[in-house]
Amino acid sequence: MLEYAPDFVEIVMLFNTLTMKCVGMQYLEAIRRLKSSGFHPLRSVYLSFVPDEEIGSRDGAKKFADSEIFNSMNVGIALDEGLASPSENYRTFYAERNPWWLVIKATGPPGHGAKLYDNSAIENLLKSVESIRRFRASQFDLVKAGLKAEGEVFSVNMVFLKAGTPSPTGFVMNLQPSEAEAGFDIRVPPTADPESLERQFAEEWAPISRNMTFQFKEKASIHDKFGRPMLTKTDSSNPWWILLEEAVRKANGKLSKPEIFPASTDARYIRERGLPAIGFSPMANTPILLHDHNEASFLNQDEYLKGINIYESIIKAYGSYVEDKSTGSSRDEL
Image (cartoon, rainbow, N blue to C red; front, side, top):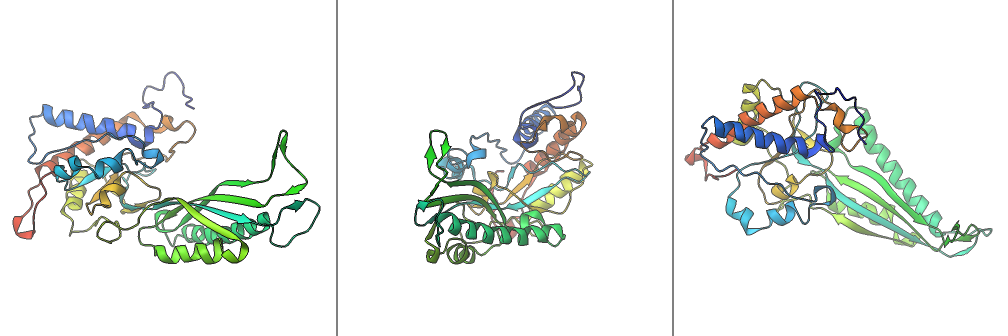
């Protein structure tokens, strides 16, 4: 829902303004300006607009990244969305947490609501929920204490709880159910040990000894096709990073310390192929309100226009880059 005064002429008004709508339009305008100026890139510059990012991108970015068309493009660097920054410094993201959507299920003896049972389905489930809550708190405490950034820890949030025997008026109130389920959205850092995490699921969160099972609704890989963590280097060994730093500086922008994106973006399908990808949305002095109420009231016109200048500088730098052949093979596109 959007609420704004009719004279808010300095605000960009679009649903999901702070995700990709602003970035997509900034790309287009930056390229229009470069073409109008007579700029001729040495490399091809591709823009991709694909669907379904909010629901996993299986029919969007994933299919595209797996296609022969993408392979023939010979991509050297990819840019994708980042996040707004409340400060004057732009945020950049060299990796992201990967979604593991976990459902745990408990079973137990059904019976009358007045009877006391050991190991009822709901009792077994609540024991697991408490174990998960403690793990979540331990991760959140690291962020609160300033020891870790949000993208460097696991996040675990319950998204549904399912139990009970339905009736025409709601639920049967004097019957203990034989099954109970809970679903969790888990975000896994790229440096995590996935085998250790799965052992924790089996031993603590859904142990067979308590008549429990678990399954994944989504389990994104944290490694690329070469078995490496999906991280893009942000140091002098990566010329694309150096070019981005210099381009932002030339456009009078400032970068904050590179981060791990706390959620997931389409960039993971690029990194999965072993290619570098950087998350970047030039929105400084802007609160982070993704999918929030009145989200669109906070992207200021001046910040939006400055972002176009930033992208113009980046695309020009990337499009003009010629790799030193003595350092290795060159990819021709971006």
